[in-house]
Length: 487
Image (cartoon, rainbow, N blue to C red; front, side, top):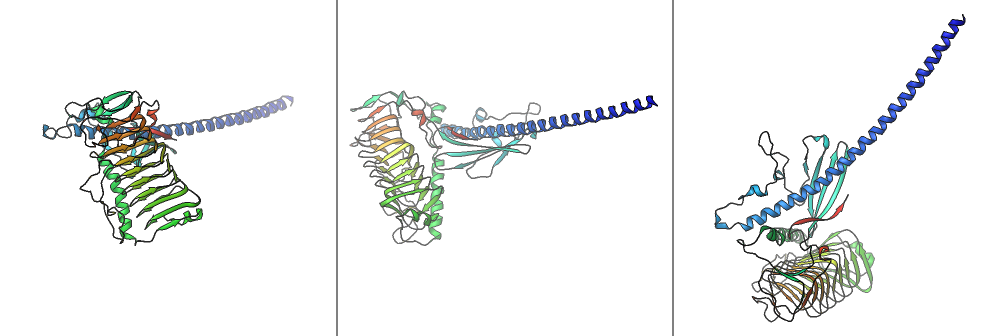
């Protein structure tokens, strides 16, 4: 009987130890599973982020390839008997299948990026187990926004990159000229002079690509703005000017203003900060003590920024002309005029802002996509009498940024008392009489008395700027680069 009791006691002890062991094992396995699950989830998150990053660089390579192809087509003479596909294999970055010799379906040649188009889903791996990325691009007027969404299993990560162009990296060269010859005149040139060879037979593709201006993109950009404004002008009846004189009045501004918009801060300080796009069918005029931030203006006629008005992080498009005068300030923004830009009196363009004139000369009859005095919808008409310059910096104006004239027959003129830091870029001529630090790029340098000169004359000063690599130009000039990155 004693032996049976001992056996029974041992049996219960074994059961207790087995249950404890099972519990411990279950807890251990569950903890390891949860740990491994979190690791798998973290690894999927990481892979999704890596896919998103890869998508940005992949999209950038598509943009670079597009620029190279356009430069290549431009360099091939029409009578050479060579098609636009000549030596295409030199620029083709496709990868071949070693076993079949067929082009992989996931090559760059298969995909294109268009502004505002749907996202393109791409897999760069042989297996979808590693995930995919979706890339898309949109245009904000000066830079392109490249968005990439990486996916891996149930995880998603997004990377947004701002794409612009950095043409000048080294501060030692201060003049880039298409016309040969050291500039004459009473100039102070503190730096090197480089001559741009435009001849197809003599120039190299890298130089062509560096100074390439994509006029198709510029025309598309201004055309899209004009089309949108013209469509609105046709659909809405004209109205009297909308006048804003109180801060509370800003809430009354609709996304579309059928008539002129006058923002008047002459009686009190006005401050408007809002992420919005305002379409003004006729004139935009901002006067007095006004601060406007983050707003995008699309203007059918002239845009006039006067007095103490300050525009910060603003995108400004005018289907005609833009005027900066008084003590107005344009800070860290972008402005594009279809016709002329005039910066005069004590106006300031600050914090690496970019000002562009496409140089289309217009008649004096308000013939833009806005309306004339009778309310008739108008479209841009090219004048038969082009002005000598399309972008003027006068009086005591100050520039810290980039000023660009895309008019090959026009250019940029600066007065004696002007101060400029950054880039002066003209597809045509430059008449520079002020003081500048940075870079001047021009077809030819002229003086005011001989605006159609054929040899270089410089009466102003130009000095090197150590931080010239911090000044960017719009995406339609040169080779695209990433200038901002957000994850």
